Length: 206
Image 1: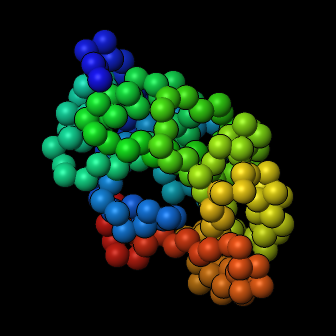
Image 2: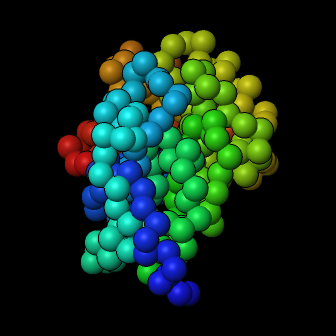
């Protein structure tokens, strides 16, 4: 695939790094993360609030992003944020595919998706509800549990995803000691769900 017409397309990049995926189905796999600036969802417990203002972050072209990412042997690229779906991701996905990457996105589903995405992790937030069109194409639904009422919220959205979508419950990090036992108990009673932990935080990697 030719990427010469994409090299001038630029995105606000808060940070980019090579690490292991810490959450969901692909936990433990090598992945290159591209964290884009810009978010209008505004989760009170967000751990990357510096990403919210896109103007705070330097823009990188697709060529710059992919040339750095391709220096690493792993071929999963995770586009995250902020809320990455606020941007048109067509050029970025095409550029990553041209370098042999599988494109993954982590999104709240609050904005329409764009680009050729190989894996869609949808993590709905109460602060701005996800679009039905995003729920329908999600590969995994990852619901962060901050309060006991979030279990009901999780079930409401599980009813809207496709039959092949994987279902994950993840404790909010600051309340993990209190919430994790509740999730374990819930999954034992509702085995269609799985537990997702932020393993990267436990082992202290990006």
